[in-house]
Amino acid sequence: MAADKAISLAPNLVEALTAAGWVHMNPDLNFPAAEKQFRRALNLAPGDALAKVALGYCLMAQGRVSESERICREASSADPLIVGVWYNLGRLSLGAGRYQEAEGIFRKALEIQPQAARIHTYLATLDIFQNNSKAAMQHAQAEPDGFWRDYAVALALQTGDDHPAADSALRNFSEKYATNGAYQVAVIYALRHEPDQMFQWLDKAYATHDSGLTQLSITPFILTYRDDPRFIVLCEKLGIQVSPDKR
Image 1 (cartoon, helix red, strand yellow):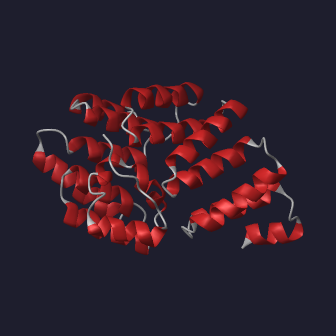
Image 2 (cartoon, helix red, strand yellow):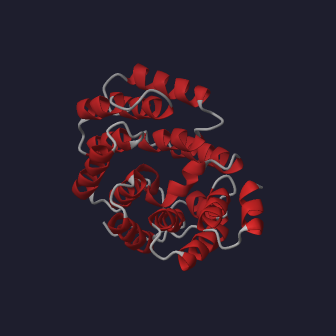
Image 3 (cartoon, rainbow, N blue to C red):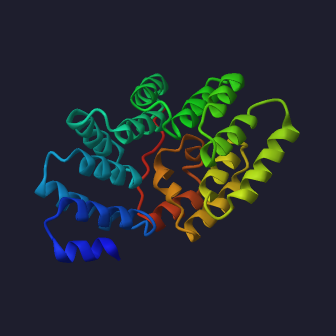
């Protein structure tokens, strides 16, 4: 692969090591291998903010959320204008149930980059937790056109009173994005409290190396089923540790 070629030519190039780490993350879902490359990059450049963002993301994917949060905060101090670091910190706060903190972080990301994708999706998720379906739809519709807007709208519709519209949105989304959105389909089924369908789509996500699985340890709706044997088996396959629910 190109990243390995770059490393062979310049084994001490931080950018090459980071690129190789991202390939191990996706599509490989090989989190230990990715962590090794990101740490090599940081050994060469301890203050590199992008390498810190990458390592923080990798630790989050493995369920090592406290380590991830520490590294992400270091990255935000090194370069507070990197939207990705605020995105990761917001997701970590959301996964931990610190909803007010998560909202503040996501709004910080929008201040830096108003058209950033996925941020409004997470604000819609926070609205759902507050049983505010109207606000959830408003945030969903504020997403830029494309995959994330389609997903956010489908998610928000599940919380309203128009059940035929919710079913139709889920059906359309799952048909349109069956090959690259299996994880998000699983999240919608989790919100609908339909675990059998959720796990079927999680199995599809695993079979297709869906990058959404890097969020497994911090996705609130799916974490409702953290004690389900099927969830435990999937975490074991991916090498993810998920702490017990302390809330």
